[in-house]
Image (cartoon, rainbow over all chains, first blue to last red):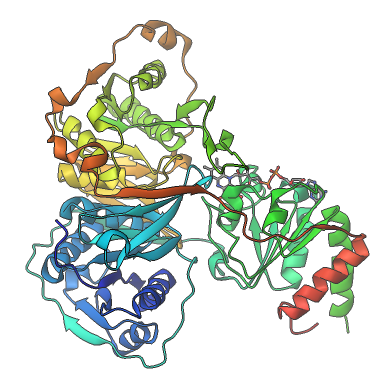
Length: 334
Length: 264
Ligand SMILES: Cc1cc2nc3c(=O)[nH]c(=O)nc-3n(C[C@H](O)[C@H](O)[C@H](O)COP(=O)(O)OP(=O)(O)OC[C@H]3O[C@@H](n4cnc5c(N)ncnc54)[C@H](O)[C@@H]3O)c2cc1C
């Protein structure tokens, strides 16, 4: 699709059982912030049932309008049916940009649509800015890590609409706006929905009682504390924190993959991230450097983890954890 | 069952260093490898072939030097290998790359196309789904287990953040697989020996006849505006502290951040 009269930023609302994915709300907040001085709108696109609660939530985070398709065949996620209806919505409304949360579903779905409408798609981006260069009014400049986090590339889509991107969940904040109001626009679909994919079963992940991506407090372990992992776990438990880990420990099989932080694990932004015996490889820091406060314990003064730390302690993690545990346990017993 | 596997030769990103002065990537002397997820894709294909028969045909788009990677795949047991190589392809983004790959795939009939989840140099995870769209067949991403195959259908497990899904889909289809799906086999010495001089099919754009306007940097909808190496944002000097003092400092930060459990 050639660049012509595209307008507005559309955001795909991923949801399940009436719960909206945070990644989608983060995008609404971010788009609202970027477009606040323009005439363009932030439009939430939801396939499924839009009840009052959902409507209010989308408005609260800054959606100006909500396009909703309540056809029963798209109420649950199906990549092919969703691609078909979203393509139809693009062809009806000509958005200037279309953003998807960089979740498994977002990253499965968005490429299919970009191929169908012939437009550019940027994957797993971590930064979005307005690009007003060369007359590209309100187009987006979208930045993403590449080469395992060693390099960042800023991508534009100058000649095609809508400009599309998947955005890594957790990198932007979600914030409520002061005067929420979102207009509802119903979309009735004419496309034949005939996905041959059948869901046979859905198996919830075990031990996923708390997701590390939403944790406020994370105590994270690297190879440097492999022999005293129990101490790290104990500290995490005492503090009601989630246990995080570097890939080294996940690959070694001593920590569950679910706990991995970084480029190929979760992106986290807790209030406090405490890295114990983690070197701070770019692939790790890519997933945690947005944490509000970072404490790092490492016995190597040159460890790159100190480059992102607010409190960097050079020392033996085992000894420090021993003292920390003692202090925590003391204050724990009345 | 006829299976196509999409593979890519990539620089080994764990060995890439950034020049701290200039911020440029030091690529010189970085060894190339088969993209790890793709190697798992090849392994899955070979396993399916072992139980269900058929052929495994690998495709890659890349420079002439990618031929060596394809030979290595012969040594692992694949039946056919095609290299899509033309100056016109260079600089293609995922849209154009997918167009090239799908055009080559259309010259055959495959029941199943398997791609690795993503390549470690680009990490986009887009080429698989885009190829499926160009082929007009369904795709399922993030597959971590092939649960079974019958005459008409493939039974898969797809991994999502909070759940796994058991899905059933008729052939033909495309899947992208996670590297945990299969552990790549070692190369077999006789295979290596027998395949040292085996030909790799090389197709250029005379063979594929794709519109020039859809290829390379010019034909790619996305453009790279700029690239830069990671800048170091925060700078605090790390301190050497006695363990007791270190513990106190950590407790102080915990208190300040409200991170102490209520009971404390
Ligand atoms: C494509 C790709 C994706 C990746 N994705 C991720 C990812 O998502 N997440 C991730 O974490 N990694 C990822 N990695 C791996 C990453 O490059 C590093 O190899 C990994 O993070 C290293 O883990 P580590 O810091 O625990 O181990 P090491 O690098 O072995 O570091 C251990 C650290 O502990 C310190 N130490 C040792 N003993 C002590 C002690 N007694 N007290 C205090 N400190 C001590 C050492 O000084 C050292 O700094 C990825 C790599 C690739 C190639």
